[in-house]
Length: 143
Image (cartoon, rainbow, N blue to C red; front, top):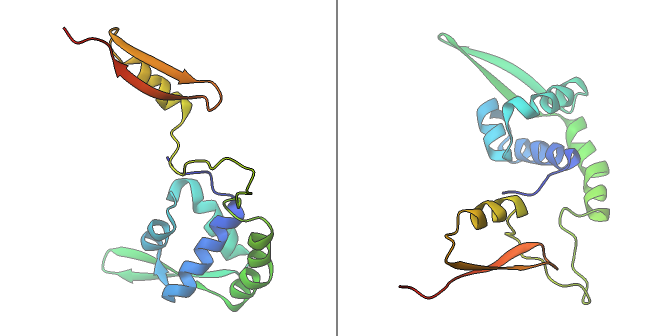
């Protein structure tokens, strides 16, 4: 499961991908940014409304292809506002020396409990309360 990504970072990812590639069709842009079109269409609409990206439609036979391009205003917005914001509030906090490192791929406690509920009765489940996750599943004596 991927971590939650703030709206600001989604906007930055969209603009950066468009700058990297020059222009992208809607499907490629959504895919490269790791977004869901149904959920994030409103962000694309707002970016276009605020003139941070431009949208054009190209007709190819019976299909209409939507192509997005970055605008100079969008590039400046990314450089002057979003970049300093990300420096101040990085996506993943830098860990101090006194902090305990958190594993990058930590599963959701609900998923862990689902796994635990499917374990057979002859297996021992140990849970560490301090991390609220299942630490080990060990089989008892095999008959």
